[in-house]
Length: 236
Image 1 (tube, one colour):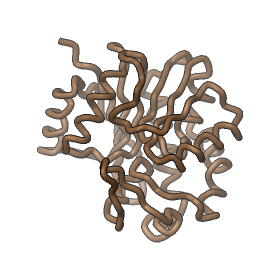
Image 2 (cartoon, one colour; image 1 turned 30 degrees about the vertical axis):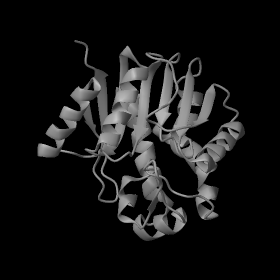
Image 3 (cartoon, helix red, strand yellow; image 1 turned 90 degrees about the vertical axis):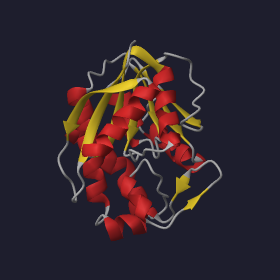
Image 4 (cartoon, helix red, strand yellow; image 1 turned 120 degrees about the horizontal axis):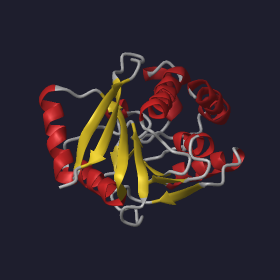
């Protein structure tokens, strides 16, 4: 699965990065919070000239590709995704995960990709069209207000979103729980958290109606320690 994803990502996105025509959003790499950025009234953060960031901070495209491919590998190995699953990705960015999952992992299901940035959704739609993937839907929306029906999703995916302790993050988790089926799972790819920060994270989860089922260690990449957090609904 990992090799198939790497081949897919190389073909789909390698040329985009080289052309320096993309912008970066928080879902792509949480370390971008160290860069100069602007924030709109709703708190959405965007960075310009992503290719320059990748060249300067991550030594180009390879480290980002490695994080993405490791994420897919961990999801395939531990998330128990079924071919008929309905999956929503929040903060889907360029759609590389969503399109691949729709094509390779849920051929009889459906993927909904949601991103706040219209330009990202436009590029993701083009990627799906190029890959001839039809069981996928794209929405320009706030991830805290997806508009999806209650208990309609088997999995909710979030890749490289900062594991924040703010109210906005709690709202994001609450929305994830609302659209998740009682036997569904939230799949969170994010930086390693431990100690008191992990305890704080667990408290936010409980308030949101979720709890940690499993934490999967992924291969370290470019000094980044990334984990797959599998969250399950807390049933009272």
